[in-house]
Image 1 (cartoon, helix red, strand yellow):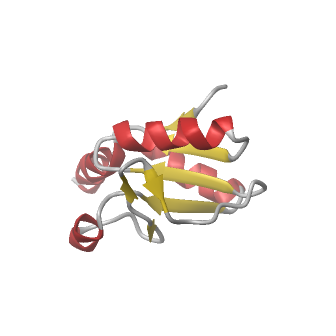
Image 2 (cartoon, helix red, strand yellow):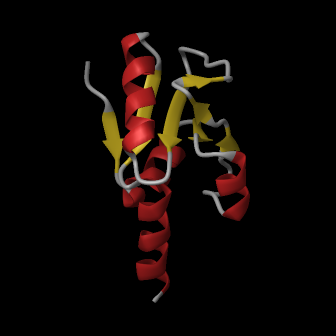
Image 3 (cartoon, helix red, strand yellow):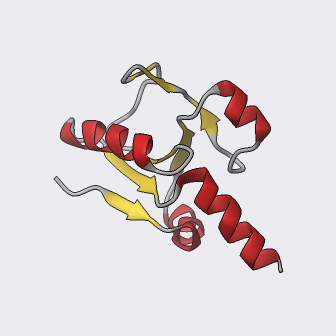
Length: 102
């Protein structure tokens, strides 16, 4: 099973091609401190997540640095969901935005 890893600069293009659900799997507190616009907060705690996924939709998962979202993406991919993960997570997203805005 192959998990698609999306670079921050590819995210916008992906979103324009099709409907993508952006899922922030960090804690609610981390989400409140900052998140990707349009992202839904669905914390991944103890290897479980309380969200209903539709196998026909595409999900872009992210966490703080990309490790936890990769674990969840692998699990969902094994169950034949359409998932990808954001390379570098939210930290990568923030770093990219700082570079672009200079």
